Image (cartoon, rainbow, N blue to C red; front, side, top):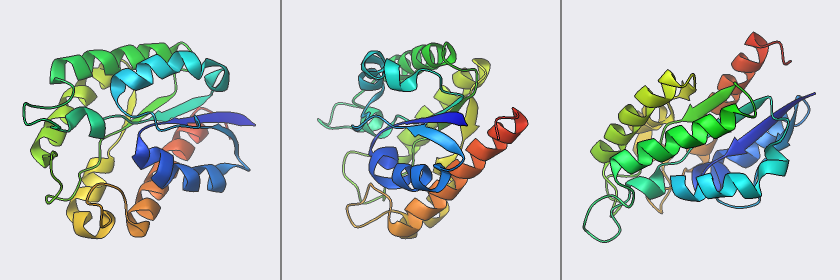
Length: 188
C-alpha cells in the first residue's frame, strides 16, 4: 500500500485532513503530524521532528500560508513575501528528498470580514509561491480558487476556517489531486 503524508496548518489539521485520512485509509497508509503545522518556518523546523513519520512517503500533500499572510500587528504580513517563498522552496526541496510526488495546496481565502487577512495579499502570495514551486516540480492544488467564489458558504462563523460544506469541497479536491497523481505514478 502506498504511503500518503498530509502537512499543513489548521485548514488541513482540523478541516480537510481528517476527512481525507478517513476516506483514503484503505488505499494509503496515511501520516499526519499530531499538531498544526502553522506557518512556513514552523513547518520547516517540524520536518526534523516528523522525519520518521514522513519516511517512505510516496505522495506528500502540503499547505502553509494563512499564518504567513496574516497582518497581526498592523505592520504587514507575519512572514514577508520573499522569506515565505524562500522557506517554501526550501521545504519543497527537503520533501523531494523523500518523494518526487509533492502537491502544494494554495492558501484558502478567509471571509472578507476577517481581521488581519486580505484576499489580495493571499492571492499574491499564492501566485508568487506557485511560480517557484512549479519550477521545483511541485504540483499545485488550487484550493483558493475553489473556495473564493463560495467564501460565504465555505468559510465558517469564525471567518477563517472551513464550514462543513467547505471541508467536504476541499477534501474532495484534495483526494482527487492525490488519487490522480497516485494513478499516474501507478501507486494504486
